[in-house]
Length: 140
Image (cartoon, helix red, strand yellow):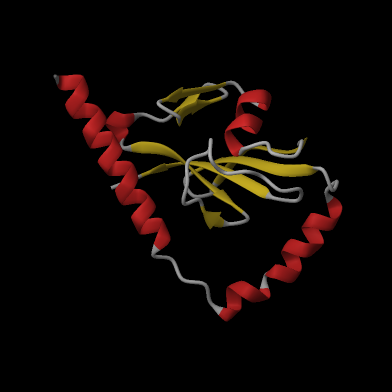
């Protein structure tokens, strides 16, 4: 019974976080940074993605690497194939031994090309040149 309630709370929390992330707005200033993104993408191979693992909204970078991908691979596929991950019902809870601690209200949040993802990692199909960021952060 307690486990079911915990899962309900976790699920509701995730839905709320996605809702908040979807409320972000794009400005002309954000669009201006696309030239920088194009420059960075040119440095990457056409069949690769950049994966950044960080903490506290990018304050500390743990990993930054370029990974070759195949057509149809998802964010989850890349993470599972190139990092030591643990998950709970598809939600990544640990990356390379760094665990999101529920009691500290932490979660691994991910974005692609600096846009918060609106679907789970198993459903997000990557394209060459994408930049995936997983950030361990507090949610409240």
